Length: 109
Image 1 (cartoon, rainbow, N blue to C red):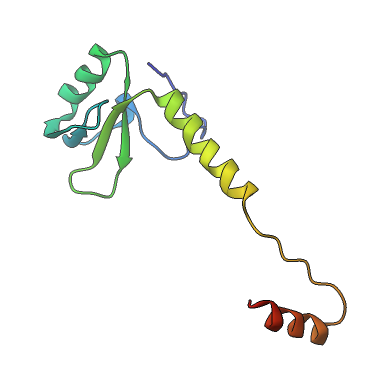
Image 2 (image 1 turned 60 degrees about the vertical axis):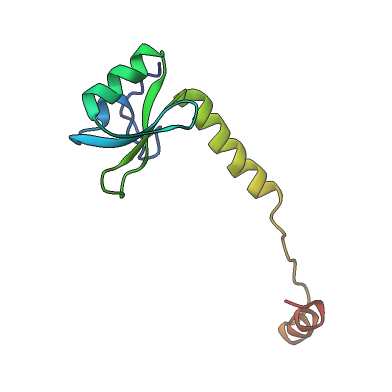
C-alpha cells in the first residue's frame, strides 16, 4: 500500500485517504465494475487486498476509482510518457524561411 506525502509527486491524483467524496464508482483490481460504493467501504476493500484506492476519473459523477498497486500504476504512466517522447518526430528546418516553407510543402506537412 502506497503512502504518498503531499509534495506534488502524485500529479494531482488522489489516493486512499485523500479521496474525500461520499461515494465512488468502483473498479476492482481485476477490472470488474463493482458499482457505486461508499468511499470508506471502497478503501477497506483496497486495504484488505493490500492495494491502493486510486481516483482515475475525478470529474465523473460519482468519481471513478480503481483498486490497484499505485507504485506500479505510476511506473506504467511514466513509461507511456517516455515512449511517447521517444517516438516524437522532430522536424529540423534550416536555411532561409522561403526555402523551408517549400521543403515543408513538398514533404507533406
